[in-house]
Image (cartoon, rainbow, N blue to C red; front, side):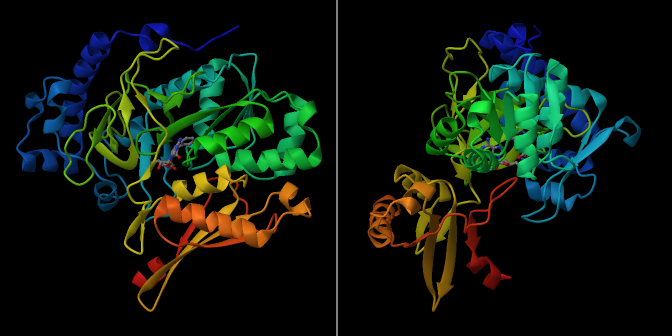
Length: 435
Ligand code: DLL
């Protein structure tokens, strides 16, 4: 039975992790300074020379890189090797602006695959598993990343890509898929389809590796119950490589960041100050081994906190908790900060599933927020279920959670569009007026 747990790396003592990171950082800063023009300019402007960086204690001397830096330098931005060394690109979706293209050498791909192989092992995978990958393939990193990790581990890999739910179910049943890899919202939709097809007992699923979008503990519980599996979170972003930058082990108590490749920091998003363990702030990554597209102090805009506490699994790599939102996800409605995840918590706590759509609008200078949520099939079949009373209860609980009044509409099952990849759960019509 092959395994891709690498104890010599994944359970390394802290001093060794940091010594290894320091040595890699010094080399990486030199590589970036010599080969990435916009970053050299940034360092020069900040008055920092590569020789000033002697180890991780000097990391905070380096300037941050933002998505705007990468967009402004499109298409090559941080490319740091000759094109002849590059074997692949991946790209962000470009939904919030111009796309970012990330470049990989073969070694970079091997590093990425290694991280994904470790993630599959942490979810209980071996080469005897059937890994069913229904993240999108193509420019999106989800499909290629988990596909590569599964190959490295030697598991049977089903490169399903997203969509065509009927075919997903057929392969799951016929080939005995054991590990499901997709976005949590698609896992949720698959669970619904499996329930309708009445085939849950015929499936061999045991674990899921779900990421690429925020999901709550409440949603984890629902997916685990509906599919009869353990659901593991996995995190990553195109700019830093793709999925596998961090992932959960069997204890599901935060995602282990692959510190032999990436140095994390948490900063105050307004001041840039580095924050200690336990404080929520913006996650920043420095990639210390990637060669083609190495980013130093890249601001992810994702909000979370870190812990260096020892994990029960024995892995010593620092853990990040579930992403609590993005600094650009937060909506200001009627002057109050509102996170979609807060709304989701209230809905799921009340027995609804994650089929909802939030619409924010503005009329006569006044903001409004409307939460549309589907009743579950069980609610719909229950003659005593009272829609008006249900809406009233949600309005009250949302008011307690958010501090503002939200209109709630409980709608019929299957009336809100399902997603196959990353779910779109917020429409902020005010954005349209701003353009
Ligand atoms: O979503 C990479 C990925 C693929 C991760 C498959 C996990 C699984 P991008 O499309 O570049 O890359 O989007 C990156 O997605 O900055 C987060 O805001 C969000 N994100 C990714 N994983 C998680 C997660 C991929 N586990 C952006 N929880 C990131 C919450 C996540 N948000």
